View 1 (cartoon, rainbow, N blue to C red):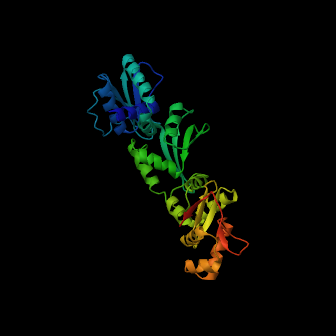
View 2: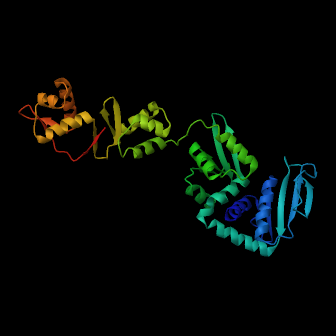
View 3: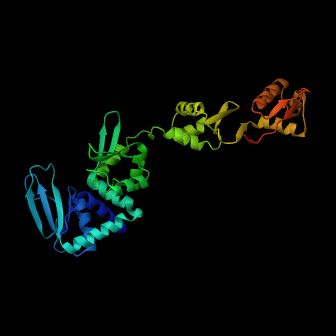
Length: 338
């Protein structure tokens, strides 16, 4: 029951009165969550004196199965847009035990997702707006260390806006984490709203510098544009634009192999060549040779051989000596063959 207990801790932190010392309360407009909280708390404590308060705009008895509750009070609340419930058990001792349990659960990093799931069910919301704006919010008067820790532990990027009294979370990568960890699934209506909005994302939305940082990290080995395009689900034009930016800042370099450019970081000690150029290098390992001889050995025309040798020369792998013969040059760089 650790998962369910941690969820109820989150629910109570969001919708309970944590300043009171003589009663445990939980308020919510979802009867399913009231039942969930009741089930877990009653399994932990002897809550025989529990009460349920039902508030509705017109003080009407509602169509819910309230058979689990013997003490029910009905009240009118003309400000309420929909019915809501308050679960309450009065006991100084139970409150002391419950607060001690809450403290232990919050100290367990492994329970962060479960606590956050419960808290989002209470204080979370899903907002949409113009220009495909999709935002997850967690209402809060001020930042809380345990919320920051929980969000950070999942790699969720967020901002806290005091004027809006809430945590603001945007970006598909964050929605992906919420979906994976099922952080919005405890409250039935919020789960439905989350899944509807999440299904409307057309492609992964990356943070401002995500592609610049991650593509650079990816190029510890040579990779072509089409591989990066498929990997990051972006057009080859967009990937080429990012690579161009990285090349201007001298963070990456490219090698032309056939009709394809292979990109690698500049701090990687590597030169990329074709299998044909590798044949010329192998042929020169026995000593300097003329262009005509290399063309014959490699079964290529003298013109094509001359072009490939000049390209190898620009890479610093061969040179033409005073006897008009080609010879290998020493290099500390690794040679990658495509």
